[in-house]
Image (tube, rainbow, N blue to C red; front, side, top):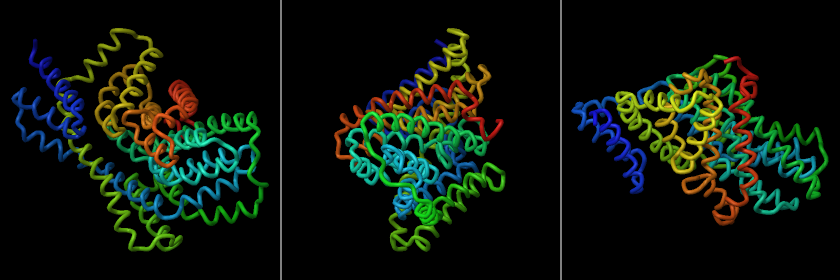
Length: 428
């Protein structure tokens, strides 16, 4: 057995054993990398060097601001206003509460970029609204969880930023331009399904449309909607970098929460910032360790070996893409999104490049794929949040999601094989 082959087995073996022992992903990666470095006789100083280098990236500076902005909006009173705006815009159709759910999550996803945050902030209100129109708790919970995943595609998204760096420095603006139409497309698919479901069940509309009320609701929610405009327009049109737009958006969220809406006192900022720091620390530690782990993966040429192995088995592009998506979907059920993006993306890039598959399009597909994983046990954080806010058990919540799993997978395949769905706003 060659030294490189043994090193690959040690790296993967130690990592998997530690994960099986329920050690955190960051610690498992760090230990596996250190053991492999020592086996290969590489200086351990390299681990420190690449760990520090893992977070010494200007693009990653956008992540803290996105997270802080999301927490400010999440706890700053914008959720209620977004739901009222969505209700006035579309609540008048059959089963309007479901449409309100979809549109509100689209708005909120464009601010927070986090599925669990979406469910936690909007879920109690959305589920109660749908129940008032006759929907079962199971259906309302399933739709709430599915629409939260839809919001992950809509910029801003710190996961898209992480993917951009992991894929070799892709344009964040291009990913945002691709993510917006993809998120809207998924919302339309969910909307059609919900409309047909409401018609079959005979659910009535909530109220008559009023342009005056819609205008007032829009003005009331404008402070939050400006966050979307700042980030999307700033990055997509080259006015600001992703980091600059994230910083400006976070400042605007602070002003909106404490000086425009004033639903929470300024003293609450400490708690909000602490929550953001807790989430950020987890991500940044993972980013740092993953860089040292990723370097040894590249040093051992693991991505190239996997690419060669897959391309040797079949040269059918369609079959390879289906296989890749199946692997990512499985990993999303057992690992966190950030971990998969940092570990798996560099491995998949050579394969996708060999297939001449656009990495921007795959970024959107991968985020949706991992979003579905957030709704599946045993790791699915969004699934557990949905269960908590609805009062249903995890098993019942997963069962309620069955039809939505099919819809999301169908949307995933459409985005994977129809490039036009993500190229509407940009010819990347």
